[in-house]
Every structure is written in structure tokens, then in C-alpha cells.
Amino acid sequence: MTQESTHLRHGAAGRAGGAGRPRPALHFAPVRGWMNDPNGLIQHNGRVHLFYQHNPAGPVQEHIAWGHASSTDLWTWQDHPLALEPDPAGPDRDGCFSGCAVVADGTPRLLYTGVNQGHELPCLAAAADSDLIRWTRDPDNPVIASPPPGETVRAFRDHSAWRDGTAWYQVVGGGLQDRGGALFLYRSADLRTWQYAGVFAAAADHGLDGLIWECPDVFVLGDTTVVVVSVWDGQPPYAMWMTGQVTGHRFVPRASGRCDAGHRYYAPQSLTLADGRRVAFGWLRECLGELAGPDKTRVGAMSLPRELYLDSTDTLKSQPARELDSARRETLLTRLVHGRATAGVTLSARAAHATEISLTPVGRDVTSIGLRLAGPGRADVQVQVTTDGIEITEGDRRLTEPAAPRRASTAADAPVGQVRAWYDGGILEVFSPPAAATAVICHRDGRYDQVEAEIVGRPGAPPGRASLTAWSCGRHPDG
Ligand code: FRU
Image (cartoon, rainbow, N blue to C red; front, top):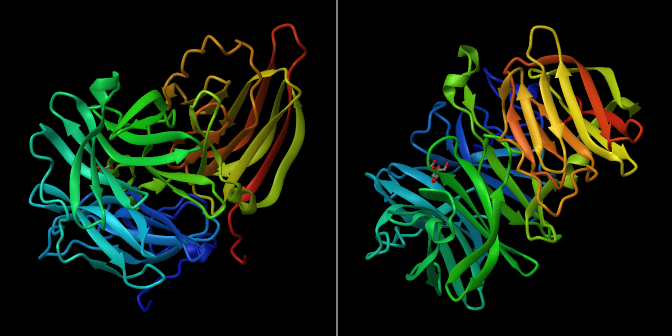
């Protein structure tokens, strides 16, 4: 633990984290350097461990190691030293790419992708202490010597593993020349020796998108198998969920959709908490070119923790993890809105705290909720929520996919539920189940002094009503 940096993330001192761009208050981001996918999510000895693709040396995706942080509330993170670093003499000499954690014989293990001169192969490491600070690589890495012979493999990386009876299974993400994005299934008794069991799922077999499916995440909710992949085939890439059943060694999806309506959320990974909730974090993609000179010290953030569940049609939904309630500090505003109202609330991308804005419809007549952030010198940010989806624009720039067309089964004037939006370091993350959660990144120097809400009721009904509340969130400097 000697080199460990304890970073009090939400106080003024903690946010500084050294010179450079401050960290958001609730969204995890590294002190400096590059961050992409969440990896190896695991709850162990009461702490949730978040590993992540990281280059601490600079804000570029090079020499990728596994960063490490842990938390008890999913929004205050303690930084730890790198968990895995490329070993100049090992099969991961050029990078330790994405992977997952499992517990075997009481010991957490990581399955990750070792990169060596263009080859990407599965590697294994075991925890060497109970705080998961030090990891020991398997001497026989890589534990799978090549992509499956006999398949026309286009990419082969990233892992999701689970145990079924006495056997371990893992899927490796990637693609096939003729069938697009694909997951390759392997079986093992000990995590070290793996037998290939065939293609678990492939995009073209089911009319789904993707030349490559990266970062698989396979888990079960109720009786349904959920497979989340990150779809790579042009711009912008996105995370897709599929729900269905496993038959033999194949996954048969029956429904699928986007995990998030924005263009930032990618490579999500989830874990089951001790109380049974399944919680996901996704990487909010940024690139260096989007940042001004003095901000080029760190790139990439994690989404807020999202609790996953299935609705009655086996559609994967998410809601903000309840731990976020404990981040609320001061109530900035509370009022009942009839139709439309404007309130003075100051939001700044540079503030040391985040702001949560909640709009709770009164009655069942509200069919749409609009939220506008406005301030001098900045394009307005407009959020529009219906049961179909969440759409966000900044000035005339669209930051989200168009909301999906209404399902025939959904009444055109179905009531919307509560809207909860967090503005944090320029990230705007909005939840309003049943719409897909949506994270966007707004102007880097966003500054707004007005929040406008518009509550729309059913045609012919009186103006809709909703209660509007705003809180500052995150730890106070003295907290
Ligand atoms: C997804 C990804 C993974 C890979 C990792 C490398 O963002 O491309 O497929 O393991 O990033 O950092």
C-alpha cells in the first residue's frame, strides 16, 4: 500500500489531483492521462473495485495498463496504484487490454487481453493481497494460444467469464470475416486450460449491427440471459444490449437495443452487488482534440453507476444507482411547475460540485418534459424527454440519436416518469425510465444561470405539473 495515493475526490484539494483539468465530482476520472473501458468490476471485502484501461503517462491510448480505484458508495473513489502494467518480457508487453474479474477458490482473478506485436490473447492474473492492490500473472500466459483455428477471425479480444456448475465459461469478443461482430465461447475446469466451444453469437446470424463486437458483458437477470457488446463498425460506435436464452453453446437473442441514446457511452461492464443489484459503468468517450491546451492533462470519464433491470418485454433498462442519493448536499431549489417555469440555478463545468435536477410529474397526464440550461455566451442545452426516449441538443448540434419510433403498443400520450439529470464537470447524464439512460458531454466551459422546465400534458388537458428540485452534489471541501 506504500505508493497508494488516497485521493479525496470531492474536496477542493482532491479535485486538484495535481496540476491540470479538475476531476468531475461524481463521475470517476483518472487524475491524469488517458482512460477508456471499465474492467474487472468486482465487490470484494465490502468495497467495489473499478479497474480501467489507463495510460497515466499521457492523454493518449498508448502503453495501456489497468488503473484501479475502489469505493463503498459508487461515487467516492479511492485511487490505487496500477494493477497491471505491460511486462516488457511478457505476452502483454504492448498493452494490458480489457477484461473481467471472477472469484475462484476465494481468490479474485482477472482475465484480460495481453497485446504483443499485434497479437491479442487471453491472459490470467490472481490477486496477491486482499485489497486487490498486487496481482500475480499466470506463468503460462497467454492461457489461449491463438484465436480459434478454423474460424475466419477478424478480431479477438476482451472477456466476460462465468461459472456454471463445475465449469468455467468465457466469451472473447471480436468478429468474423463473413458474419460480422462475434463472441467466441470457451470452457475450462480451472481458468488456465480452455477448450473452444464455438461461436456463441454473431451479428449477421441475427440481423444485428457490427463488424466487431468488443467488450462483451454476459449476465443473467431473472430467467433471461443478457449480453452487452460494444459495436464497432464506423461512427459513432455504441453499446448494444441483447436479451435471450442460451441453447447448448449458443446465445439466441430475441430483443436488442442501444444501452444509451448519446454518442459517448461505450464498453460498459457490470457487476452484481452483495444485495443482488446489477450495476453497470460505461466509458464516456472523449478525445484529446476536443480539449483546450491546459485541459489536455486527462481524457475520459466513467458514467454514473447505473442499476440494470429488465422490463416485461425483456428490454434492458437502467436507473441511477440509489447510492447517488447520498451525494446530495444543499437543496438549491424546490418548486411546483405548472406548464413552464424558469429558475435561477448556476451550473458550471468548472464547479467543484455536481448538480442534480429532478422533475417528478404530478398525476398521470404529463406526456413530455423539457429541460433547458441557458446562460450568456453559451448555446442552450435542451433535453426533451418522452416515454420514447431522451433527446439532447446543444444549440443546433444534436448530441443524441433520434428517439426510437413509438412501439405500436405504446399509447402516443403515455405518461412520462421522473426525470433525473446530473450536470457534472460538463457531463450531462439523464435518466427517465423507460427511456434509455443518456450521457452527453456539453461545452467544456459550460456556464448556465437558468434552468427552464416545460411540462406538457395530454392534448386538451390543463398544463402538466411537476415538482422541480435541484441539489448540489458531492463532498464539500470540509466533508
Ligand atoms: C474498447 C477497446 C477494447 C480493448 C481496449 C483497449 O474501447 O478497444 O476492445 O481491449 O479498448 O484499450
